[in-house]
Length: 136
Image 1 (tube, rainbow, N blue to C red):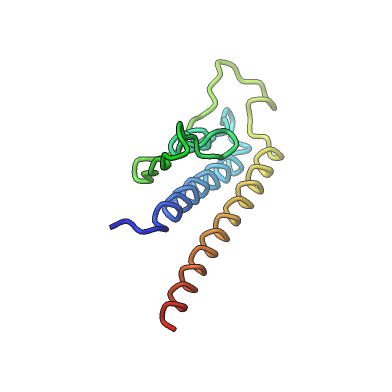
Image 2: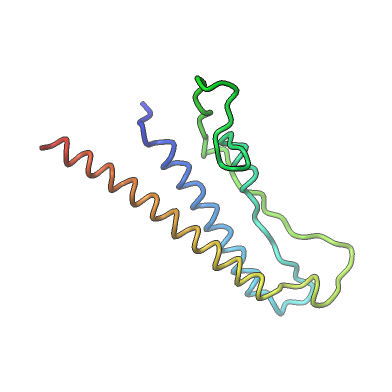
């Protein structure tokens, strides 16, 4: 029987998994900075995630009527799209790994991951408080 908090926790956990995969991919890009003909790889999932949870571009749930409930999110079938930038040419300095860009992506991704851990922590703090208040 699904509970009140299952979907938000499941969704946040899935996004954390995807963020971890992205962090690993960016780290691999940085480690291959001196590899000849290596092209940086990316993991994109934000647009697919928005449509999977039926959100519009501002993050609000899209509904045709105010009486409709949002669509349930199924984390089991959702995954990010990993891809390698493919071009027919190779220009040194343009098609290789840009350290500044990768370090920026690493920092941004790490901050979002930390924010998601805080969201999960607060969710569990709320559940613990509800349990503690129920025992009194």
